[in-house]
Length: 314
Image 1 (tube, one colour):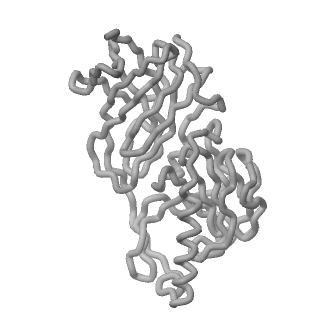
Image 2 (cartoon, one colour):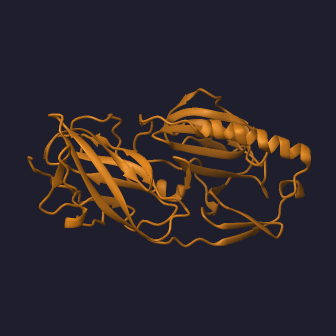
Image 3 (cartoon, helix red, strand yellow):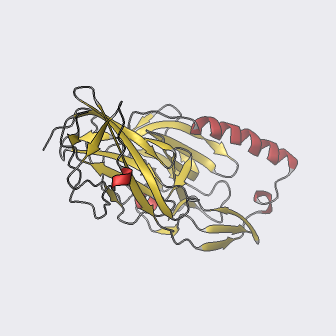
């Protein structure tokens, strides 16, 4: 069996781990990647529960495609012509315990041969605060009629959240939806009217009623309607299982089915749904889990919208 040599790495990111002998998988059907000093680079440098992250790899041979699994989720790499890197945006569930987890990858070379290897990825525990809030009683103890509405809306949201495309709709760095200060962070334990009920699954921005709200990246609007807890809500599909949610709006500027560009006006902020006052709640959902939007907004991502293609050796 031919043993291919692969050189991985990119100097822009700050963390890597070499493969160990036990992590190299040899297989009669699969050509295994072996390297002089193999490494995968990722950002942020320290990965924690609840964090979105980007993995990068630079092969020494041309690949048609590169994909894999991480924490039970499928990941689909894209090729960045400018840097020669394959990269993917992924995420770590809030409930993930500290430890080392395997990133398993498989590539297809230009000649049609399969290449595979595993990499151990360390994950630490993030620091998240607790927050006590007071809201209208109906949002803590809904009546039977409201419970029916909530159940119906759960079905509507579940249908929208099933949206998944391997194609990437976003390109480049994600931008803030509104240029104001944040007022509540992701991951805090939420107590409503003295009862602990949930984890804050997004990032809150200060925004008075009528403040313009913009799409954090390009995609397709899959939900734009009034919901009980979320109020007026817009959900954008960015592809590859990545969604952004904009809650408590006062007015829609898009409708379901619209294609939107990064920075496009999509709504005006408000105080609808379960709120203590007007603001924008931004949430990021990736393959069924909520991630910290603040980290996503700081990730350095390629501007290229190229799909998976053969990577050039550098």
